[in-house]
Length: 160
Image (cartoon, rainbow, N blue to C red; front, top):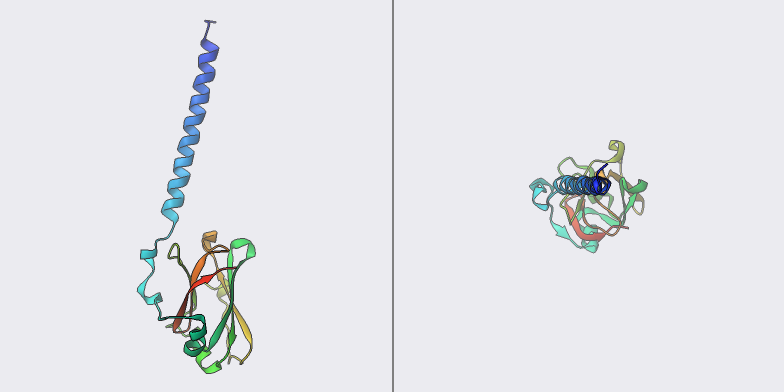
């Protein structure tokens, strides 16, 4: 065996491993970047008049209680209390389905877990919940979201 051959082999294997690692990092970064939704992708039909949390009661008849990520990050739990049952009936109208919009990415989360939805009249002072699927865990604890309930949206809600 010639002198320096072992050293050259080790150096070549090390450089090859670094090259493979660098390619893997670039591919992972590019895949994640392309999968991220864009704020420009929010469809106009999801836009609603923006109101404060206090004004949501006047507009949609409900008080927003809590928005939290649950289920190991795979679900978003939205809790609301009914103040005016007649106005709150708009929460499940086909023209104004409930949704959560991640303000950083523009991702619209609107698929309810197992397509659940409240049926029947809502009762005053009763707290109800909506559980949305959180695809890819995009919405995280600490995220700011817009909550769409009825014919209104409350912006800058911090997710618990």
